[in-house]
Image (cartoon, rainbow, N blue to C red; front, side, top):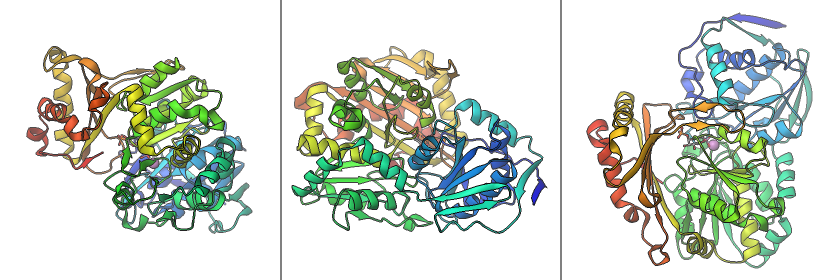
Length: 538
Ligand code: VG1
Ligand code: CO
C-alpha cells in the first residue's frame, strides 16, 4: 500500500513570512506539493503514532492537496489525521484544534489574503504543537530538506470522503473528519460575553460582516447570525468559493470597498468588519470611522478587562516592528511590557507560550491573543462587539476618546506591488549602505536595519526592515514582502505621533504628507522602480 516515489528537488521551496506560497500552476507540477510536505515531515522528529491536523481555506486546489497530505501522513507513520469537513479549516480554527486535541502539529493550506483560483496563489505551512506557525529554525530545516529530497512516501488508494463528519482509515491511520466551526465557536463562547452582545443587538445595534467569499463565511454565519442572533444577511459574501468569487480576499479599504462604502456612509450600519482568505485578519470600521489595525490593537488592549476572557488584565502586549507605537502607549499606562518583533505571527509564539504577552498585533490587519497561536479575524470582531456592548458608545467615539487619552499615531502603509525584484533589492541595498550617513539629516535621530533577539529562546533574526527614526516618535520603515508570488512588493510604513487633540482630525495622508515625500526621496523609489505612486495605500 505504501509507495516510495523517487523525486528531485525543486528550486525555491523556501517558506516566506507565512509558509510556502506560489502560483497554483507551480503547485500543480507533479511532485511539487508532495516534495514540500515530505520535507516538512523529514524536518520533524517523533511524530510516529501522533495526530496531525489538516485543513485549508477552501481555495482552488485545496481538496487535492488535503487528500495528498492525508495519504502522505499515513505513509509517514502518523497515527491519526483530524481534517476539517470538505477540507476546510480557518487558520485560527486549525490552531485551536491542534491545541485542544494535543496534536503533534498541523498542515494548513492557504495563501491567506492572496487571490485564489486556477491562476491565483496557493500555499502550505506547518504549525507546531503549540498551534503556532513553525519558528524560523524549523522553516530553515524544512527548506534544507527540500533541497536534498530524493523520495517521498504516500499511501495509494481512493480519496477519503471529506464531506461527512466521522472516522475512516487510510493505511494504518485513522482519519477523523470534524466540523470545522464547532470547537472554534465553543472557544469564542468561553472568551466573550455573548449575553451582553445579544443585549446590544436587541437595543438596535446593526452590523455587516464581509466574508469576502472566503473561509470565515461559515464561522461568521454560525457565530454572528446563529449564536448571537444578528439578522440573516448580516454576513455578506458568506459562502467560501475556490476563487473567492473573484474577490481579492484582503480585508482593507481597497479590497473590501463595498463594505467600507456602506459603513462609512452616514446611513450605514453601526459596525462593519471583514476577514481574509484564511480567517486570520480583520478589518474594523464603525459608521463614518475606519479604525487602523494599529489603533485597533491599542484600543483592544486598553479595554481588554471589559471582556471576560481578559478580565484579570494583560501580562504584556506584542506588536510587529512596522506596527504603530499606539500599543506602546497603552502598555506604558498599564505598566506592562510591550515587545517589538519582526513581521509575521511566528515571532509571537514564544512570547505567548512564556506568558510574556497576552495580546499581539500587526499593522497588516492582524490581531490576536493567547487563546490560539495565530492571529484571529473573528476574535477581533468579537472583542470589539464585547467592548461596544459594555461601553455603549459608537466606534468613532471610542476611537476619538482613545486618541484624546493617549495621543494619535497617524499611520499609513504604502505598497508598491509587483515591482521588478532586482530593482527592489537594489533599493534596499542602497538604503542599507546609506544608513550610517542618514543620522542628522532630515531630522533623523537614528537609522538601522531591525534585528530581533527573542527573549525566550535567545535566537537572533536580522535584516527585518530599514527604520528611520525621527524626533517625536515619527518613523519611516521599509521592507520587502515575504508573501508575494510575483516580482517584489516594497512596503513603506509611515507614522507620526500627534499629542495635541485639536490636531487629531486631519486626513491621514495629509497629516503624513511631509514624511511620505521624504520616504520616496530618500529611497529613490521612482528612480529605481519607475513607480511615482504606490499601488495600495492602507
Ligand atoms: C504580510 C504582512 C504580515 C503578515 C503576513 C501573513 O507579510 O505584512 O504582517 O504576518 O502577511 O499574513 P509580508 O511579508 O507580505 O509583508 V496572512 O493573513 O497572509 O497569513
Ligand atoms: Co491570513
